[in-house]
Length: 156
Length: 80
Image (cartoon, rainbow over all chains, first blue to last red):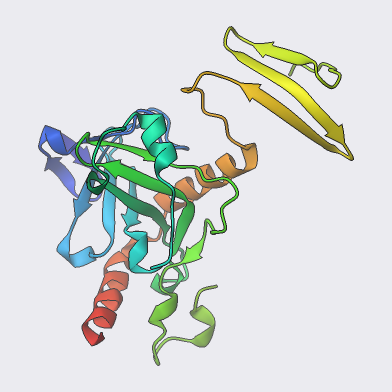
């Protein structure tokens, strides 16, 4: 399927790579189809591009790369989406990143709204986690302090 | 907005399938029980709003930084 995107121009994605979010994505009503674009230049960050809206793209990533102890119960996703019986290794956890104006050291991740993608069904859902010990603005680059980086730019 | 008064144990019906019951009231806190079909999503308003707002913020991010951030990330990986 061919569609337009603001960031990548017109792209052509096989239909079986289009991810449906039947329950929607909060804030983006009516934009329920996405594709996951992994580019070498932006690894480990992935683009989550809307099929329905060229201007809508999020950056998501595997949370375990910066928070090895992060734990998320995906049982509610399996229940809501009726994924019972699907193999767990077809389900991937991603978190949505916010890029702040202060620069790349200020990237944060929303750990209370992970997106669970079922690659077998080509479906996804954003979980909304109540009573979570995690933050919706968890610093992603906190471990990347270098000599050239000002002290006060870390994880604020 | 519809405003109505209920006593403890009383219920409100919303449409055919949703029932809200007042379970307990104490010191400014109300405990409510909600019966609804499984496909009706029920969230505490402020948590849903927080995620919605963060999604909107994320969609307007300073994406020009993405390649720089990715390259910082890979430099770190290479050192390890």
